[in-house]
Length: 108
Image (cartoon, rainbow, N blue to C red; front, side, top):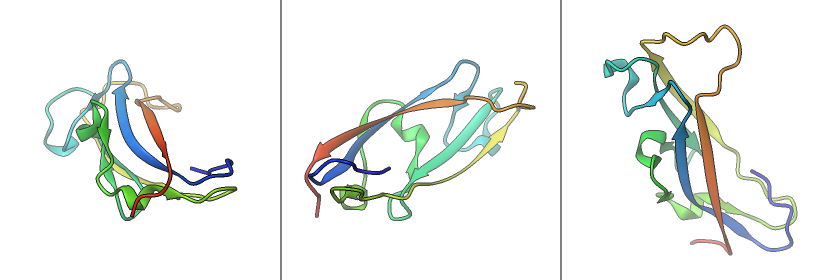
């Protein structure tokens, strides 16, 4: 994520919505649900488990989400697994929508 404003901001909260037909779970390998996915996203210091953010929730390490003004960046990484797939994934498939919430200022 990149900040193009003239003041510091930080990612403060996240909400994850599963797209139709997908189930966001804590452990896809152990899930019996069809089209199960588990994934983590965030800066390396605060990887967030999507299954814990199905309701809006504050990030666990606010300082990891500080973004400096005028071009500051927080590099995001992802990892995850899928299981019991019945959906056609031969082409790009939308499995989730992420809602990021920002707050002015930096966290310490």
